Length: 431
Image (cartoon, rainbow, N blue to C red; front, side, top):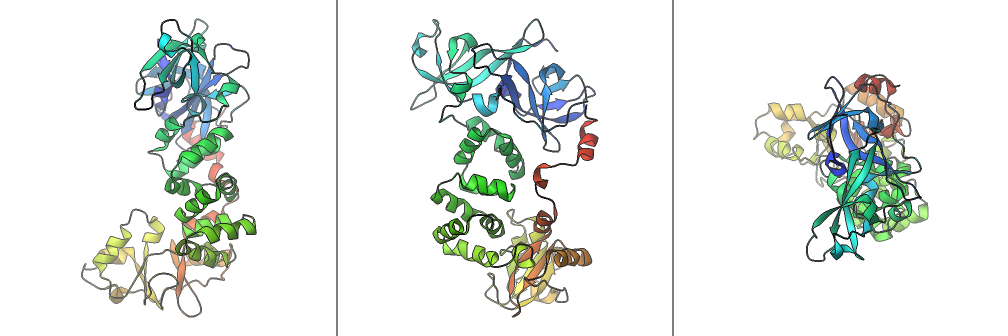
């Protein structure tokens, strides 16, 4: 271990983790400490590392050879690839300790005696036996109008850092939310899945509706329903309205029918109507797989206007790959479907050209009742990532994208089950 006298745990969050040869293995996401019911100084057990594959693993602190301002270096590139699972007596510093209310009894800080203060960081230091211990606690007074000053006190002068104390309600989640700010929804979903139930509920309650909707869409339907049921009806409705209609339909389809109808009734009709249309189809058909919000345009739309539409950052690459040209109304279910224009074709045409002049009207379409197998063959046969779903009257109902198809083809739990061979190639052989 490099000669480091004191390290603050929160400063480790996000640091790159390097192997002995300088290869990147992932980033630090938390610090694991022991916490006993009997009051004794907490010992650092190790680090939670998020690998390049987004799997979170545990690395014992004795595997750490150096902690520097910009990286943590391990003394071996061989680490266990087993997914981190918190054990009894283990506590996550970032996930559970920070923002906890505690009391300080320090003669040098009489102004804090008898007052609640917030934990903002923990200092860890190695001892003579190479064990790393929690030695200092950084706390901040609670002020209504402004943040209180930060004080660093000895661990022995702090009360409240116990298993029972950490289970108290109303712990803040600001540190975790800050960590999640720059992460993709699927990365936040992976992190939330690993949190203790209490902290998970607090994070869910703290997220705004749009962000929570994006994250729910990256969880399995079972996990989605579990989290949705923790929300009150009003919040659940707001989150459902923020979700894509096809994802909202998948989620509502696994709930109790009575609850589903209650939530649909409370939703704005503009949001609930497309969800109801999707729920009318079997989930393993093109009608059940489709999204009701593809890129649709009237035939007098110019190429420049079409390109501006597909530049929308909220569109997935699959949905942006095809523009569907229809008679009015252009909202699904649309007027008569005329054909589609591929993104590559749009890029080759003059901006002032009309999309009606470059239509692909020969591409076969899907019907809402086509089976999952039939839809899979359709994508394979025509080398597509998006396909139109048309009813018997020739109206565009929606579009199936390859990502929605894969969601149904892959086995349950695929979102958090990585291929072990791929993981080993990324991080070396497991012990």
